[in-house]
Length: 353
Image 1 (cartoon, rainbow, N blue to C red):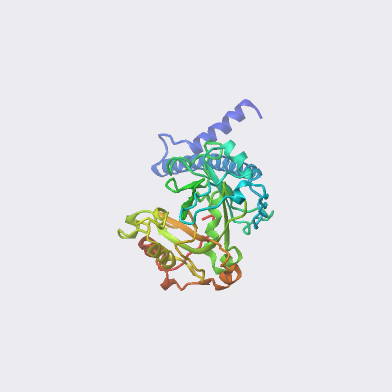
Image 2 (tube, rainbow, N blue to C red):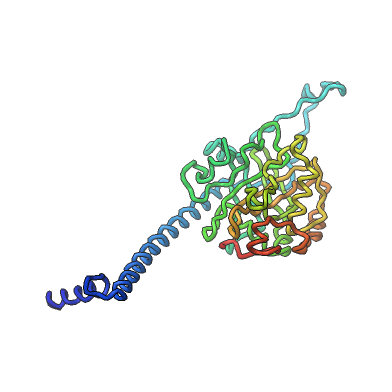
C-alpha cells in the first residue's frame, strides 16, 4: 500500500469517527456516542485487567497463608500424671479459699503466626465447605486490632489488601485469662474474588446446606484442641437505624453475659427471631459463642450474620443437625429496607452477587 493509500484510509477513519463542522447534528451526535463507547470499552478492559490481577494476588496470598493453619486433634491430649515426689501433689488446699485462675499459655502451633503479627488471636475455618480441590473456602487467621477499622484493608503482614483479614471486634477479649462469652468476627464479602467471609452467604440457600455444614471451628492461640461451634442462627441484620425505621439489633455489642448491658435472654431471643432456621440446640449464658458478620449486598447497610455456640460434652451434634428446620418467611424478622426492596421473604442470589 502506498503512502497516499495509507493517508486516504486514515482520513476515512477520522471522518467516520471525529465530528467536524460540515456534519449534520445527527451525524455529530452519532460520532460522539461512538467515541464515548470506545472510551468506555477501553476503560472496561483496563478495569477487567486490574480486577483479574487483584483477584490473582488475593487468591495467592490466601493460599500461602494456609501454611500457618493449625492441625489439632478433636480430643485433648492425655494429662501427664504428677510424680509422687512433686510438692504440688502433697500440698493441701484450703476449701474456703478460692483457687487462683490458671493462666492460659500460647500454644506451639500459634508461635509462627504471633511472630508474623502480634495481633493474631486465633484461626477460624469451616472445614466441611470446600472448593473442587477439597480446600476450605473459609480457613484463615484472625486478628484483633486497636479498633475495627485497622484491618479492613490490611492482610496478615499488615500490607494493603482488598480482602483484608478476618478480625475480632476490638472490644472483645482473648487473652491468657480467658475470652469474651461472645466474640464477633468480621470479614469482607468479596464477590467473585471469594476471599474473606464471602462463602458464608451460601448458608442462605437453604436448610440442607446448613445440615451439611453445621460446624464452625474457632481456635484461639491458647487452644490445643479443636474448638467446635454449632450454628444457632443465620440472619439478616441492619447496621444502621435508618435501614429499619429507627430499630437496630446491636449483635456486635453483646460480649459478656455477666454485664448488665448484655442481657442473654434478650440477645438469644433476637437471634432466634431473625434466624432463617430453627433448631433444638440448647443455649445458656454459661456457654461460649462466636458471631460471624459480613456485608450482604442485596441492600445497602445490611449484614449477613451467623451465630454459633461452642459444643459441650452434653451436646449431641447429630441430634442438633436433625433438628435444623427452615422457618416460614412470616416467622422471620426482616429489616424494613429488605422488606421494601425484596419482600418479607428469604432471598439468595449467590455469593458472587
